Length: 473
Image 1 (cartoon, rainbow, N blue to C red):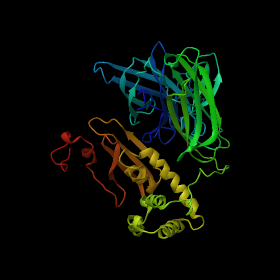
Image 2: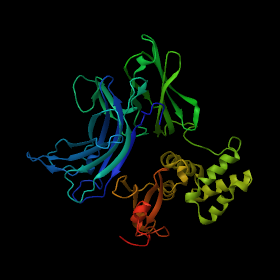
Image 3: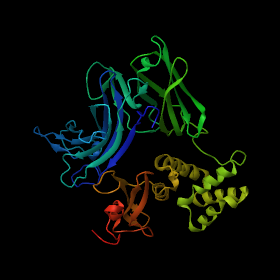
Image 4: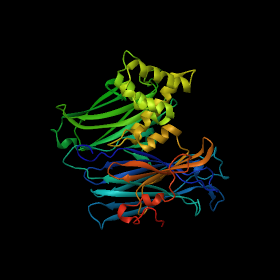
C-alpha cells in the first residue's frame, strides 16, 4: 500500500464461463476496469467499467421483435470495520437492438459503467456478472476485492490512473461523461501496433492543504523500459498547476515510435519545493514490429552479459527442458561461462535451427509476463505452478476464476481444448496460503500429472476437512 493507503490501482480482469448451447459465442467474456475517485467536500466513489464481448452474449427478441442482449451485475460491499453495514446493488444493462439475431462477426462489443458513492471506509467487494438470457446452465462470473476508500482531506492523494481509448469534449451526460469529457475506457495493458496513442487521466486532490495559496505544484509523467528504470525513453511531459482541492490531469503520448517491449508509464506529483507528494505507475505492454529497439529483446552477448545473468536465463528454461537437459540446469552454477553459453545456444538450436535467437526472444517475453503476473513474496512467477504450466503448455484456452466459493480457498481451473495427444485437458490451481497468494496445482487429468478426485477437500481449511483426507464427502 502506498503512502496514504489510497492507491488501489487499475484491475484488468478477463472473465470466462463454460460455453452454453444457445450463446452466440463459445464463452461469456467481460473485461473489467475497477477504479476509485473522490469528490472533495462530498464523497468518494468506485467506478466499475465493463466491456462485454458482444459475440459471447445470448440475444433474444424484445417486444418489437428486435434482438437484444442483457447483462446483470450484482455488487455487494461489506464494511470491514462495521459488521452491520452492507450495501447491495444490482444493475441491468441492455444492449442496442439488431433486426435479426447477430452472428459472431456482426456482434459489437458493449460498454457499460457503474458508479457507486460510498462513505469513507474499507470494504470487501463481491461482484457477480451474468448473462440474463443465458438460461439456467449459464455460469455467472465472480470477482472479489478489498477496497480502501478512505481519502484523507488533510493530505494530498490521488485517484487511480484511468486508461482511455477515446476522449472528446461534451456537455451532454452519458455513462462515460466526466469532467466535461466524453470518455471511452481502454480495457487492457496491451497496446498493439494499430493503437497509436496512450491516453490517460488522473485526478489529484487536496494540494491546497499542504502548500500556500497561489503556489504551483508540478506533474512529471514519462515512460521507462522494464529493467531500465534509469533510462528514460524520450516520452516526457511536465505540467505546472495552481494548488486546488481537485486537479484533473489528462495527457496523451503518441506510441508510433515506441518499440515492442514492456514499459512503465510514471505519473509523479511534486510540491513547489520539489518535494514528492505522490507517485504512481502503470504497466504498458507494446507490440510494434515496425520499430526496432534494444528494449524489445534481451540478447546474449558475452561482452555484456554476466555469468549470473546467463545462469538466470538458463534457469528460466526449466519448464520446457527435457529430462536430460534438467540435469544440466541443476548444475548450471558449477559450470564455466563457455559451457553455459554453448548449452544455451544448443538448447535453442534444437528447437528452432533456422532462428534460435528468435525462439529465445519469444519465450523470454512469456517469462517476463508470468514474472509480472504470478510472482509472490517467496517465488518468481516462472517458478510458481501457474507460471510453470503457462510456460510449459502455453496460454490456456479458458480460465475459470473462483475467488469466492463457499467454504473453499480461492482456485482457478485452466482448460486446454487440445494438448499434445489429449483433448479437454484441465489443471486446477488452489490458493492454499492466503498470506502468500501462491496457487498450487492440485489436480489435472493430463497424463503424467497429479490427479486427485478429492481435490475439493484440499481447498477446505484444515479445521473443516474430514479427519482423513482420504474420506469422501
